[in-house]
Image (cartoon, rainbow, N blue to C red; front, side):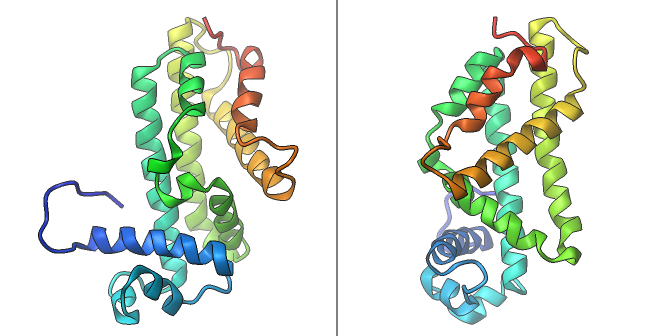
Length: 206
């Protein structure tokens, strides 16, 4: 879902969706994704039930829209960072110190993101749609790896697509571990692991 930044005098569908995303994130965290009702989400956003249905057919559709919006924003944000930090070590440090408070609800709450993925994955019929988001996230990492390899002069040492799958599995795995045991799983566990595995990935930090 694309965000529009032009000056407006009346709320647009993007405005309404953004408010619903923010409200849904709050309600999901308070009541659980399965227990949250459309009425509760609409009320938290300051809308009627009818306003919800004018934008989304169901709670599942809202969840998919939130996941899609998060992936699109993540791709733009990471590519913008990569354009400014071509060195892998600098890029990882920029990711580590990024201000999450200005991100979308799932960017601010990686654990909610993981919970939503697990909620959607429970229903087999929903998985193809979820797979599209997974492939987009893998491609983002593959593109970052390709750029980092070119900048390091070590092209072709490792398949970027496979590296993307490995890194994404690390990211999702650490998110799940943090959900279960936050005391021993720091928020930056994945970035720390990637830094430790730079030599294995075949990209130097120089």
